[in-house]
Each structure stands twice: as structure tokens, then as C-alpha cells.
Image (cartoon, rainbow, N blue to C red; front, side, top):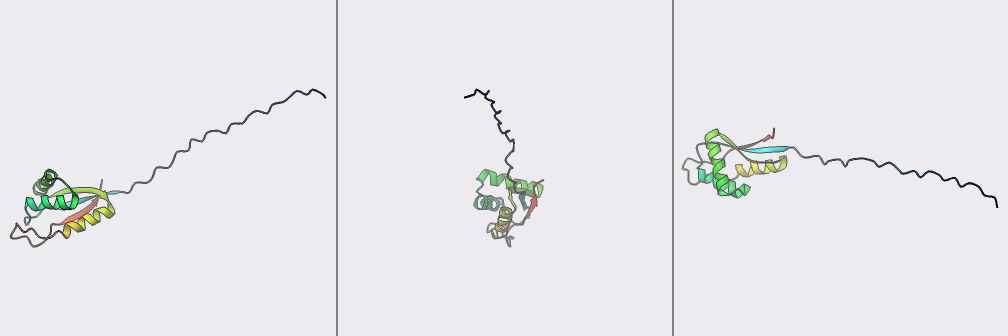
Length: 114
């Protein structure tokens, strides 16, 4: 038997790929805006914020105060579909029984978050 020098093949280690996982795309957010009028009481707004949005009384009062002082307030920032639902729920909430001149619900719109 002849002795041949054993030639070792170099071990090839595959390079680590630094491929990053793609981040899931986030849906754009939209503000649900409540607009002021003179036909609904603070109590109505507070009750509506608790019923439709789950806001505690203090948060409902802050929104009512902002609507009164600034003419509008953001009630919620969420996805378009959820914002549309909440806007429609505000429109369907009904008149304010405590305000004699209330003929229906308050007005709400949605707008893209900037």
C-alpha cells in the first residue's frame, strides 16, 4: 500500500444571510372627530363617550370640554374601518333627552392621522 498524503478539502461554511424579516405593513390611522353644536349637553357627550368608546367619565368630560371650547375633539384614533363604525354609531346615538332643542345625534367625521 502506498502512502499518499491525505489532502483535506477545505470545509465551506455557508455565509449567514442577514435577511431581515419584513415588517408587517401597518394600516393607516384615522381620527374620529366629534363636532360641537348647541343642542347637546355635557352629560350627553359624557354618556356617549362611555357607551360607544368605553371612556371613563373624566375622559368623556375632557372631550366634552374640548368640543365646547375648540369646536371639535378627537374621540379615538384607529383603523379606517373601525373609525367609520364609530362615526356611524355617533350619528345613530340619538337625541339628547336633557336638551329641549335637540332633534338628533351629534355630528362626527373621520380624517387621516397626520
